Structure formats: C-alpha cells, structure tokens
Length: 155
Length: 274
Length: 127
Image (cartoon, rainbow over all chains, first blue to last red):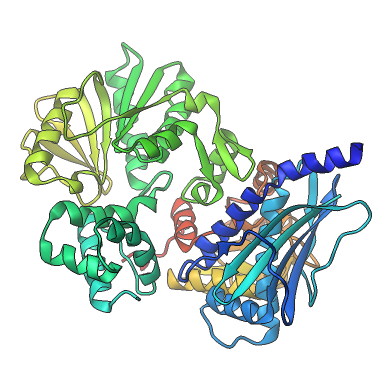
C-alpha cells in the first residue's frame, strides 16, 4: 500500500533514537541538576491523572507532538526547570507546554517541508491525530517514580 | 549515596586550580554522574570514597583523571573569544607579511578534542587568506581516538552548535542532518585529524606557523611540560606563534620563549626566531 | 545593562530572565511581539532583546522586522531564542535583522557565550 510505505518513510525522519536525543538535550539544558530519565522498552500504562501538552506542526505533512506525564511528574519537572517548589497549576502547565514546544521545534527540523509550529495546548488525556495520520515516533521513559511519554504523529 | 560536601568542595578546588573552571553549588549531581565510571574502575564503593582515596593518595595522574572527566564537555567554538580575535587581528596580518612569498599557512591545533578549535580557525582562515588564494591547512591532534573520530566526522549536536558559534557562521558553514549539524566539505578539507601523544616525540608532523596548545600542559608535570615546549619550538617556523591557555605560561618552564601581549592575550614566540 | 525578554512562556521568561540577571542585567519582560513594542515605547531602550519566534498576537519574526524598521531602536541588539531549528529559519531571522540566534534547548553557558560574542557581557559577569 502506497500510504503505508510513505508513512514508513516518514518514520525514518523521526526515528525513536532522534526523539531520545532531543529529550536528552533538553535534559542536559534545563534539568541537568537532577538524574536523567531512562528509556523504557514498552509504553508505560497511565495510572492516575495525566497532563498532556501538545503542539501542532503545519506544512506538507501536518503533524502533532505530544508530551504526556502523570500530574505529579509535571509538578516535579516544573519545579526542577524553574528551581522553585510548589508552583501554581498554571505555571506547571506553562512549563510542560514549553517542554512540548521545544521538542516539537526540534522534531519539525527533521521533517522535510514542514511549516510552522502551533502554540502549546494542554489537556488531561493524550490526543490522537485522525484522518490518515500515524504515530511515526515515540519515546517512553521512566523518571523518579513517574514517567514521560513523547509521541510524534504525522499525516 | 549522595556526594559528601567535603568531597564536592575538594573536587571544586582541584578543578578550579587546574582548569580555571568553576563548578558551582548545585552541580553535585554532575560531579557524581561524571565520576561514577572512574569510581567503578577503581573499585571504590561510591564516588565520595573514590574522591577521598584520590585526595589522600596525592597521585597527580588520578587527580587529572578527575579534572578531565569534569571538563571534557567544555568545548566551545571560538573558546574564550579573545585568542581568536588576537589571531585574526594581529597574528594573521603579520603572517601575511612574513609568509607572502609562499602564500601558505600551516596551523596545529594540539589536543583538539572534537575539533571545534580547528574548525573555528578554518572559518577565520577561509574568510581571510584562503579567500585571497592562499593555501591553509590545519592539523588537529589528540590522544583520544574517540574524539578524533567525532572531529573527523564533522557532525555536531544542537547543544554543541549553540556553544559560541556566531549564527552567521553556522548558516554559512553547516548543513543540518537529522538532529545534528554537518560541517561543509570546503571547511572539512582544510582540517586533518591525527592521533598524537604530546608526551612522545612529534614524528612526521612538519613545520607550523601557529600552534594552539591551550589548556593541555596542565595535564603534565614540569619536566614533561618543558620537554613539550622545547619540541614545539622545534616545529615552529621562524616568526611563528604559540597560543597557550589563559592560565598557562612558558615562564619558569622553558626559557626559549618571549611573551607578547595582543590586547589581553599572551602569545609566545621563540626567542631569536623572528 | 538592560534586557527585554520576549517569550509567551512564563517559564521560559523566568529561565532566560534569571540567567541574564545572574550575569548582571536588569530585565523587563513581554509575552508577545505587540507587548514588546509597547514596552519599548514606554521605557528606556534596552541594550538587548531576546526574542522567541512562535508567540500569540505578534510573532518574533514580525517583531524583529518592526524593530529593525524603527531607527530609534538601532542600538538595541536582537537575539532570537527559539525552538525553530532549521537552517532556513536561522537565515530568515538574520535577514530580518536579528543579530544572533540561540536554539532552545540551551544551557546557561551557551547564553553567556552568545552574549560574549555580541560584546554584551556586563563587566561583573565571570568575575
């Protein structure tokens, strides 16, 4: 099937290894004072409330980048990023949104003929991209007693 | 087991003394993660115990292993800025006068690590003498084959590209390849990477107009330093220049050099050599 | 020295602003391009503006273009600090008038080195 072949080709642009590199570079930049996450071999099941920040990519191949974490992990990540404990909810959302924005920008640079990035959108579940879009890259990792999951969709 | 304050403070003092790099409070995690491989190799129960062992052992080689483990990622483009400004504004114009007959320059980036210094020099040469039809080549050497391989590939991560490289040079000399950036071929062709242990005789390297030997002498004892500086003098063409690290000097080590100030940068030239 | 930090993310304004203040800057902030133009109109001209690309109301590239078009702002240095990481985007930003470009994510060292390149490190820094 032609479509399947093309999607496989797109997956080639956003390899899981590349996603891991992008996340680790973010770690070295904004989270370097704490232990890094370690990649998980399988997606980690969502238990309890999660927070997801997603950023869209426009262009020849519209896509979506999602960063999903348990809510407690979101608060802990924001505290590390801003070196400030007990941040209000809106600042936690903003910080996770910025994480997604940075991952999405670096992912966009891997996709040929990509257009522009959307602004981060926060939700309490990981959105899926329909209409012929497919998951082309994914990174799951364990961090402290939580986890994070980064998914790239392209159409 | 977290790092003890005492161990962290001792490491900070050691690193600052040997490399002028300041590890701030809050970098305990960095120190610990970087030293875990050394501690394991030494069979120490944890990093603090390993550091304590090195502290009381007074073994300089082991101290320098720690310094190296904590400073190897400090490579930037145009590192420290001022030496490159001195190179462009004073050294190159002088060499253009004195080397006008051959119109050739050879530069040595000794202890080149992953090649940022060598490629930075290549960018400066490209815009000056090479643009005027001169031939310029850079020999980049290091003792680690791992860093040489990376330098030779000419591929750098996004984080490495952010480190001191002017944006206009990035767009001119690099192409994006996946998550990395690739140095363009014209620049790559100017740099040759080669394995070399500075403590051993320099074989088959030829003569140089400029030698960059920055922040590497600190790893050697005084007699080896003297030996290296004497052998560098032997491969430097008359009227050539030596750049050392900001905290380094030939004074009291090898008397065959005279020091000139270019702005705030010290450059060293062989006595009676020009 | 004074810096204007333009970014729609409050977290990022805190990170960039905090790093600049540590280097000896006084900082003011704006959450989008339009707000940045208001800040410039009402206060003394900063030495430096760090400018994000993707923002609501007015994006960073438009802001750079507008600042560039105003002679009164000629002495202010503009550095894009953005996650836009393509070669072509850097070319566009420089062509629009940005003086430097820092790609997110970045370490505090990288920010400091960019300021050193621009000759915009306050004397107190690195002491």
